[in-house]
Image (tube, rainbow, N blue to C red; front, side, top):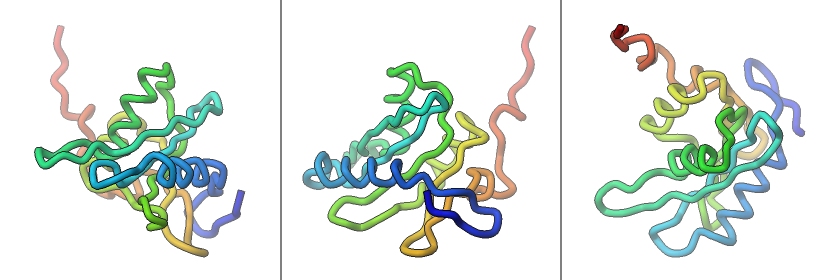
Length: 140
């Protein structure tokens, strides 16, 4: 694992390689252009690809959330997304940042390029965020 500086954490190089492998081998055509990989708390790596559709199909990060749940991995520690055709690490969009914060408030996301690759807390990617759970009415 490469050491990083500042508020960033150590980068899970194995996770980046897993996402790159899926992007290289499973992303074909315009419907699947981004792969994501996440490390579950138990050490497993879960992977997924986006499902682009003109109606607004889900990003790879959102597909990964469902894939992880289907595999019984409900606690994810770190996630990375990688573009196909060698585009490198792709940061999550705003919708994915919000969903990741809501599902996994302590998750770290690998972002950056080259020697600036780093793992950062999801809350750092979405400052002054709306926290869905904080605005739910209590029933009962």
